[in-house]
Length: 193
Image (cartoon, rainbow, N blue to C red; front, side, top):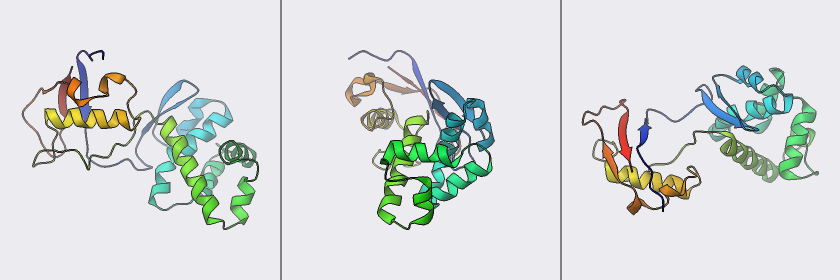
């Protein structure tokens, strides 16, 4: 396994992302920081701007919003059309489903599939992805230790959040904290080899 040379990991866990937080999105190899849905216009083509808007607002699905609310927001902003959303839905769920189908039917199983599809689109398009730390042994103050950082990076690789195979095994990662001072909202800085 190749070693990672001088990789600096800056990790901040102040709060999980919400729809109002900026996100970094990649669509058709174009990477943009999106502060609000209107910034999706930076992607140019309407189908890319529509996908960006849906991805930007996908965090709201986890907070109980339904896909129709997100679609309507993106339509109201002029970033999506009903036919564009139809095409997106058909790509993921097949020809049986459309924007109109979801507007007029209360098919909970199909809506759940649509939510999962939209969340998977977001997962593919978001450059910085959420990674749960619930199984990582942080110190008593909730900070990373060099060992827990190695566990975290290895877990992120196994979940598909990191793609470099150097992160595959915890035993192959050596982490060293660069600063001893830590605070609740302070970044931690490590060197990982």
